[in-house]
Image (cartoon, rainbow, N blue to C red; front, side, top):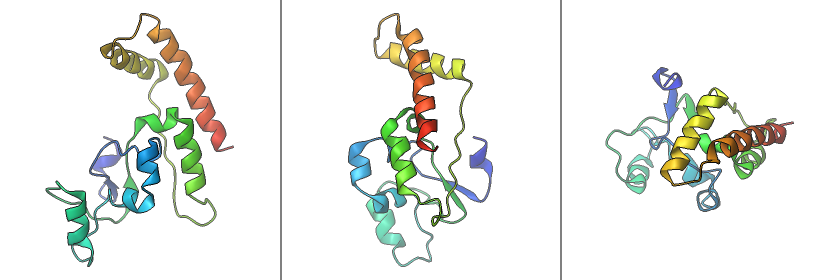
Length: 143
């Protein structure tokens, strides 16, 4: 919510793109990932891209800073590794911004989500431990 109000930041139409953490999406390549940010109407490929993306009522322009919000990236070893390998820090103009929720709130939220999926009563403790390890492992991908 903080970043989405900025006029130069364009979020993907789909909040959670899951490009880097889901094998099928990642195998589709960066062209498919880039398609999550529609081009402007002045671009010759605009109509084709909007048609390919499907059900878009108001396509956003692809300018300024692009952003997406897939919370699972930080908890996925694959996503952290893929992001680090996909973007060349020397050549690509990118910045990785990670917004981390307060750990207890994040773990409680994950616990509640998992409980809805019918996990056992030890899930909260496991969620706290798992999240701590996953955040550390993701951090180490960038060292």
